Image (cartoon, rainbow, N blue to C red; front, top):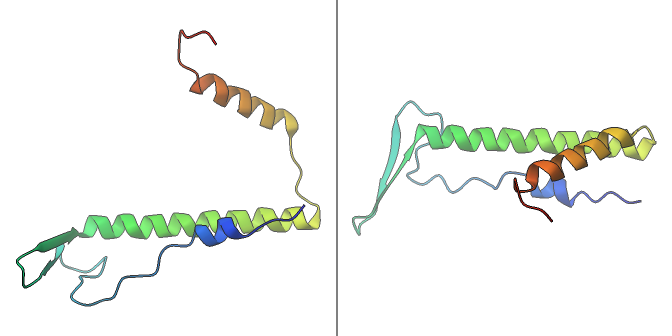
Length: 103
């Protein structure tokens, strides 16, 4: 079996946008504002910067976890508890089915 690292590559956060007239996330200002010559305006609160930072951190954690599991599998040390997996699959299927509806 071969493990593809496409999942890890897909989990990487996108590269940052050019820094022209853009308030950086985590800056001391409450909101960044950009106005073009056409009168359009964009405001990005520091909250959105915090969300972006959190999403990036989560992606890094997930990529590290996948890398760790891939290393365990490659060494032959990854052990699967089939009973735990079957219970999780059945529980998930039961939770996803609509209540009162017969199949």
